[in-house]
Image (cartoon, rainbow, N blue to C red; front, side, top):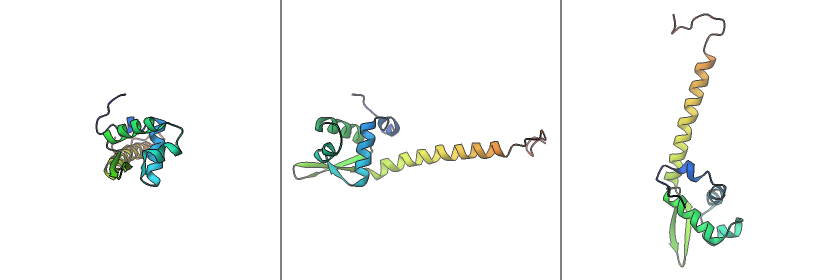
Length: 112
């Protein structure tokens, strides 16, 4: 299995099983068995996916008796959201620049 560095959240989420796990954890924290019961993948596969998500900083875990309960890591999810906001803002600025260009052949204010 590939190793992921912090900040590779987008690469980690490219896997549909990991996206499904994140979707489940967005509803509520869960143990491996609970996730495996809801998803069409085995317990060992869920554990491996959780390890990748944890290594990428997207989930955290804590012991609860003999189980480990996993939850989304707010800091990791916030970092992804910040990146997405940056991409979105750049796209909007590019669109704004495009629509503000004159279409009648007259030079814009910056060109005159």
